[in-house]
Length: 298
Ligand SMILES: Nc1ncnc2c1ncn2[C@@H]1O[C@H](COP(=O)(O)OP(=O)(O)OP(=O)(O)O)[C@@H](O)[C@H]1O
Ligand SMILES: [Mg+2]
Image (tube, rainbow, N blue to C red; front, side, top):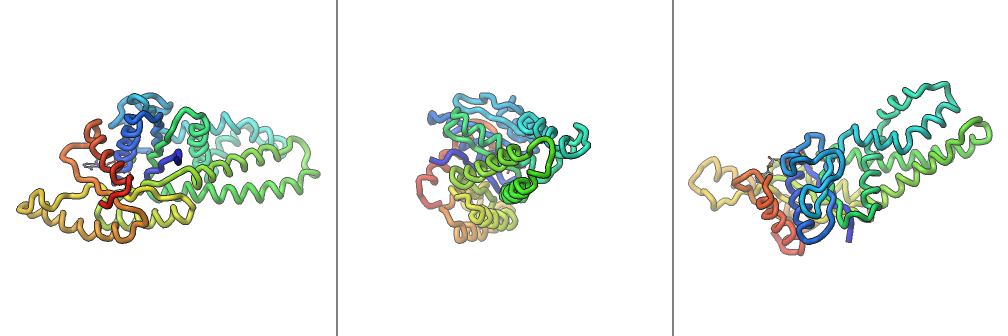
């Protein structure tokens, strides 16, 4: 069984709702689940009040955490900050403030956000990690940064090996090697033990972007588990209400497109009458998601 479920899609389509529903459902079935949100809007708190920047139990068997930029960078400093400073100082006349500057290096925040997931996975405390990710473009940039970072570190490592004899002071090789290993482990987690749940709504942009996201994930080597269309209207619910009927009819074309082009089976979630922040509505959605997951067509 894969350990990480990555829930992704355009902004506002229902990623946090779907991720919470899946996490709650699995916890109810006796699995130890960690729900991680990297969404900067903090919407997870609407569903699980009290969620914060450290993992804590929000329902039986379910822990949740909201990873902010600050938490991720603190984690980076604890793990690598001192060593990076020591190596740099031996090469250049730098002060400790260099670390503040380095926090802005592209790919670094993503690297450590993913290393948090890797550590959570390696801790053995969870059977499943559900990752409620930031919207589409950010998610892809994050994954691409991983691959670039890995290539860069491989190059850097070769260069330092050549220069080693000329450099005085601290040897950067163990640092680079450690970093490269970490990146390699993260890529393996993403490609071998992660499955994506792509969410969209039956409208032009969410569908087009969701399909692009599926293709990009496939190129990157992340398997797709579910293609979810959320907030689908029932055309029979109110055939005599003109705006409703018109919207339901507009949705149909996008449902068809999603079905035709998704490489995996499609799950449709209905538009609910209530805000799906309560357990019973989340479990209602989860039941549909998990039923479809078993293999029936939407
Ligand atoms: N099936 C549904 N029926 C009715 N309302 C829904 C449904 N799914 C989601 N919503 C509502 O839509 C809004 C957006 O959902 P959610 O926060 O899950 O989206 P998101 O993709 O995580 O957004 P963001 O990109 O901002 O993180 C919320 O108010 C949520 O309660
Ligand atoms: Mg969200």
